[in-house]
Figure 1 (spheres, rainbow, N blue to C red):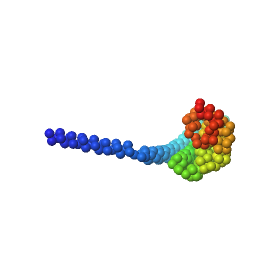
Figure 2 (cartoon, rainbow, N blue to C red):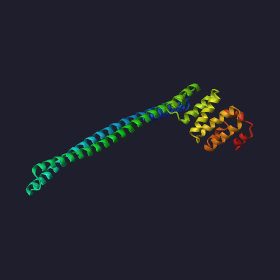
Figure 3 (spheres, rainbow, N blue to C red):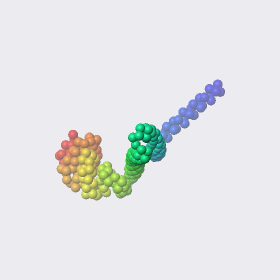
Figure 4 (cartoon, helix red, strand yellow):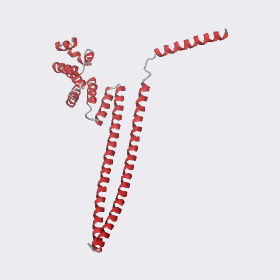
Length: 280
């Protein structure tokens, strides 16, 4: 009976604690997973760097082994070839002396000449092969260096986008987008988001120019047309704004849900074409 009573008490206690934890978790005001996402991204970046270093070490070792093996083969082949040449020439010279076709001096001169020509030819062939190996190693080294630069650039841009995502000030966001464009001047997405931030602080003309530049670089980027439509709406160019709205929706239907929520389109309210797009 005592054991049964203790089990009942423990069960009730654990249940109360569990309910208290549920209440605490349900009453959380902020998400708990954000630090885990940042930690995951940092771990992935670290893993990429380690893999890149291991790849560089592996390629360097392979190239060194290949050079050493090629040199050994060249030396062995040259030695064997020269020895065989000497054997053949010696046998031929002996035969010629016995038959009386040439004198010993002629045979000696012929041996020197043929041996020198053969050695020179072999040396030239192996120099070409070694040069080819060195060129391949150089090309692969350049590829590795270029890959490292791309990874570094990608990591830098990714970090800047993360900063822009948590930044509250529009001026600070513009500064971050400028840093991204310094790294990659043709980043259409950074141009478009910078145009959006400029609209928020009233720099309509500047935002319009950026949107035009983004469209020139990528005429299939829907968000650039959307931002230009917002700028046109501020400048009361209704027809141009509506054309860009239609273009943006044609490229990405997800903007249909944002049409009624976009605060920059308030001036288009009452326009028959805009209302037709909105109602459809």
